[in-house]
Image (cartoon, rainbow, N blue to C red; front, side):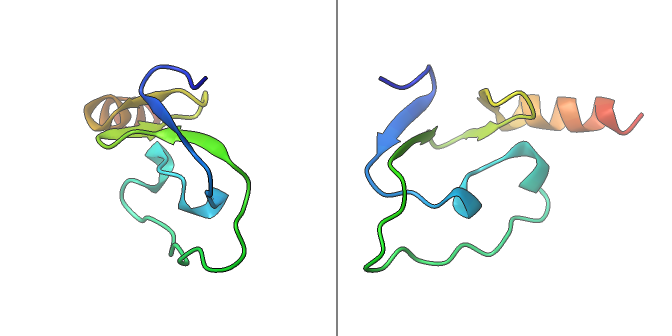
Length: 70
């Protein structure tokens, strides 16, 4: 089972994870072809993973990033 605001994906690629730190400049995400990577829980649409590993709303990401820069 996945934590709240996350869902299970059979094939995922860590570089493609949606994170608060990548909100402004997301890294390039290669398409997953024949090589299927680790199954994992990823944030559902509208949520990003914060520095503590919790999936939070985009608004919460912005709050965290703003407070971290001050």
